[in-house]
Image 1 (cartoon, helix red, strand yellow):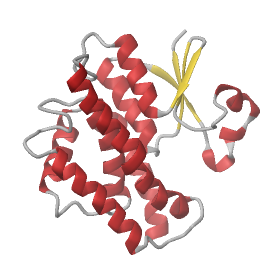
Image 2: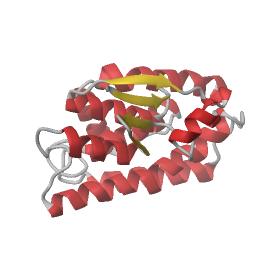
Image 3: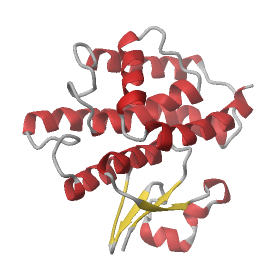
Image 4: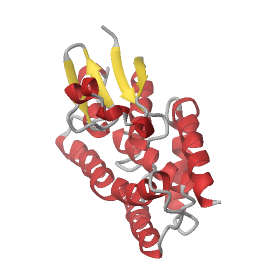
Length: 217
C-alpha cells in the first residue's frame, strides 16, 4: 500500500513533509484536506487523527501526525543513510533541538499571525507579533554562525522543517530578513540545494502568499 498523506499545500508543516519525501526519493498519494470547509473535522478524518491536524500520514495500518514526527519516521524507516537525521547522538541532538525550536518557538510565531489573518480576517500584524518573529530570526542567525546549515555543514531535517516555516514568514507574511545575513544566505542555499524545493515547496508557498496578499493589501 502506498504512503498516503492528508495535507494542504499552503501550510508550512505540510510542505516540510513534501521536502522530506523528495529528499528520500519517496512518493505519497496526496489527499487534500480543505480546512476552510472543515474537512479536518469529518468523522472519517477524526478516526485517523483525533487532533484533526495536517499533515497526517498513513503507512499501511500505521498513522502518524505532526510534521516533525512524520519526517523523523520517514527517515528512520526509509532512508538509505543517516545524512538527514544523524545516528551519532551529539549530531542528532543538535538536529532535534532545531526541530523543537521550530515546533515550539518559530512555528507558533507564524501561527499567531497566520490564523487571525487567514481565518479571522484580522488584517493587522501587530508590532508585538513582528518583534516575536524577529526574535526567532535572531536565534537562527546565531545558529548559523560558522555553519552553512542549521545543524552543520550539510542539510538535515532541521533545515527542511525550518525553511518551510521561514520561507512562509518571509515571502508569505513579508517578514524581513534584511538584518540577518546568515539567514538570507541559508535560505538561498536551501532554495538551491534542497531536493525539489522549487517543485514541492514553492507552489504551496505561492498559494499561501496569494491568500495572505488578499488580506494584507
